[in-house]
Image (cartoon, rainbow over all chains, first blue to last red; front, side, top):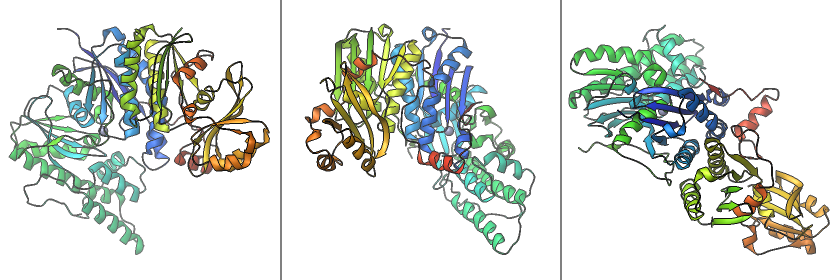
Length: 340
Length: 240
Ligand SMILES: [Zn+2]
């Protein structure tokens, strides 16, 4: 078999990443330059600051990815890049750099949807078998995606308000935890108990949509009320109660989706997929679906990175889904909804 | 020397392919708002017309600021990636100086202004010497009312170019007969002039650290520096 090498780019938010991927399954290099420390100064990602950091990093990341993978440009089969969704100014750096490399070395260009990339992070555990269902949970997105076959992604449910990761950041702020709050809330939650019984938006309707704004408001009101009467609430219990509610909602909708859409695999992906509470809960719920295999994106590949983009791009490469030099960033790119 | 020159720092997108000072192909477009979508197709076409392959290039020249932040990043990312991936030379030239180079009259003063919002300007003043613009008042982001007396104090005829809508009347009143106006086409950047300037400038020593000259901090960064004057800002991005 011919060795297929894809040089992949990711710059949709606050990580500049370039990777070299072999046959869509082997990471030869995956350079990630994170700007988290910079944006922590401002309590969240500042788009113009993000764009400025990306341009500082981009060619250094390319050079490192190529040298670490020990490959030359003549060895490459294609160049892949995230073109959306994300911050437009941030996306533009990766898209522009990827197009330039593709032009300079006469290589095909593969546009990749960032969310497809997150799902394909699970490809590094084992091959995806279709049909599959993916629960995608990140700072900007919470959605259930149905994969009928290679390169096919259809939304069956998504958040109506905040993404799960966004809710974590907002309640984290109330607890005095700096952005991104997810890992610290997850850590605290394991030390506490669900004593507050926050509301769960799990109506009995057929919809697979999520909602976290009611939970977030209940959390904030509880803390403010305690502040007003001079009472101190246990942070660990607050975190545990919040996380339990989020996990309940995610698990409930996912199990109902599995009932409605029989699949071979459930894929858990996205930044919040690194959450231990969520991983453990889905592990135990899935014992009820003995014929569904549970594929969790590797912890190291849950955050934004170019290796996942390279894995998704390999599928597009085989399907010959190439872009041209006019490819532009599409900040609001989305999968289609499933035809019902 | 085979040179690709490109300017996307403002509304105008200009590309030139040159062999020393000979222009092989050039395209200038003023109607696109999507530099990200149009720059590479225009480069590709210009190179084809010039019968050059990317590997034939010796040097990339880019207008590196000031200008629209997004526009600058599209141009600079393209230029630095091309230089890095082909292992060729990279030169950054002032976007203001590029426009000043449209004027050929020896010893002539040329002021170039871009609108910098809230009555500020991105501006620089140049003198044409041996056919090249030489900086007299350095490129900066400055309140127009502070810039105007500096130009007036030069007490010489000065050609004023750039986006002048917001400033024209006050320039006329202050400079009187010393204000020289030229047809609007001379306010458009030309990648041919850019390429000419870029061939006479030393290439950057480190392509990787090359960034646009924004001449302005982001508001978040400026506020932060005010509150943390002693903090070193060099370690905010890390490879993990
Ligand atoms: Zn992401």
